[in-house]
Length: 140
Image (cartoon, rainbow, N blue to C red; front, side, top):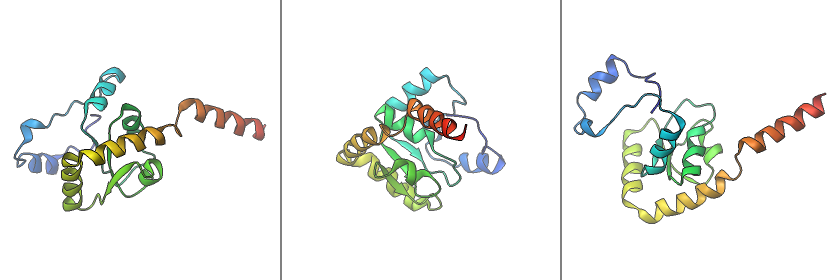
């Protein structure tokens, strides 16, 4: 889901070799209602970015009750805390092992869902707005 920023000739060449490519769908941007349904129906969010400013999709997954498989770099561990299964985004085998574990370990998914719900409480637009307002009042 989202803009195909990384979709180039190299990607297309590699994707043509994927065994189960008919199971992979590129939706582009979707409206918030559809995004919520997609996130809530996913077995897991796989977010193994190695260049990320914050990681809002992780919070969205937590709010939707979806477990998270996350890269262990950038801001993602700070955002997800103990509520994600971490992998090395530069290692195909690490990502594969994480995906297999996420698919097969029901207890782990249940633990991550519960931890994600608890973690998501720390993040809200209302809380962010209140913090910004307090900072502005101190500045002024």
